Length: 534
Image 1 (tube, rainbow, N blue to C red):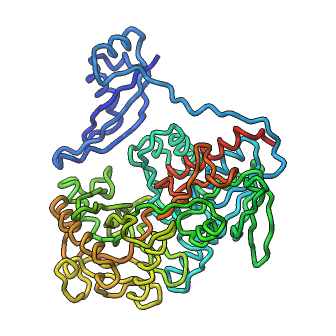
Image 2 (cartoon, one colour; image 1 turned 60 degrees about the horizontal axis):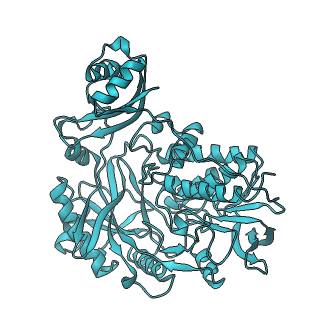
Image 3 (tube, rainbow, N blue to C red; image 1 turned 30 degrees about the vertical axis):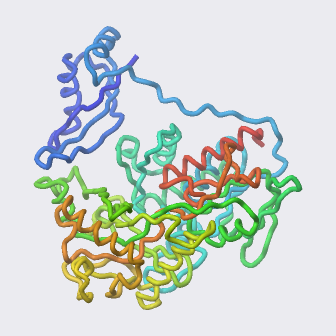
């Protein structure tokens, strides 16, 4: 038996080598009594700026008598539980046709990896390029050399998360979340992500990790076809899926399939339209829109860490803020410490912003979205009404920026006070291809602009300097989550097509790398429970 120990505190200036001694003192036993000690989780407690510390969850082994006594005596000590993964079930039906996975973002990647690992040899189709080629296409776009509408910050190997902060935090309690972290670490992500309460990979390391997982899928018998776009779905007479129609280089092909994992990502608007035409059940859902805000990283670090700002064990500081603007929620989203604002367009006449950090999080600015809740009363009726609303905002921002993917931006002081935009000050906007001084009230709906204004002012009262006049806001942050849900039943299939498994952010059932990956794994397991491996 082993015991788990919670809430072991290490001050910021204490090294991990002192953990054994501190743990022994906390337990009231000599150091020699602790036979083994393993770190299970590390979180940062920065609530008191003069007493920043790390909080450890540990697993220890002592003599059986000592363990039993400590469990009874100390509330922070419990019997250690073995981590139990979901028990897999394998079906008996024969796979006469392959399983197709559409999309190689987190949902599709982990669905395909799970299927390949257990011998199902999936065929993966991805409309964008492999991660190396895609990175070159994205860099060309950010340098102002045109958008590749099929391979960009939204489409391609790794999905939208490949050009982000690579956050791995999730609120879901599914045990598969641990498996996702382990698989990422096994494929080149930093080992530390297994321990941190708020792990991240960073775009520079995430792209290498994604490539390694894809190479494993292929080595285990799967196929991955890049620059191959889903164009249609064929049904059997009973309404179940029969085949997918794909296109590569202008040539169409029909791929018969026994099942299809649909991991399209929220940017695939043409696919939503195709599904609506096929009478697949779609419903609109609430989401949020707003702007990206940038501050000097040092300001945020000082506001969060006080005198410990810049300490080598802390890195760039994070924040998460929320308030109300009338009846609507306004909150920060996808905060990128020591990062940059990036263009995330996936089609013509779109300006879309997002945030991105490398693993080191060492850029001059820190940024986050400030977004306002949008619900079905705000956009046109119909399942794609929210998508149309997003398109209107992105088009308005495109033309406000000059019609060349330059983004409209202004100083927070000018925005809050309703002044004509003036020259940028101490905070230099990082968005590429570039920004244009603009009055953001002209490209944002009134309720969004007012909500952002109230939110920034409220957040300035919670985090010193958040409402600094020289902070920069850039429009538009429109893709916080999918505005559409592809309705599915208890079996995980689309309600009107058996064998079609919508997953991830694009299906409206996940919100982040880990939750989308878990959703993909669940779909793979449902398919495996029907069919036996090849």
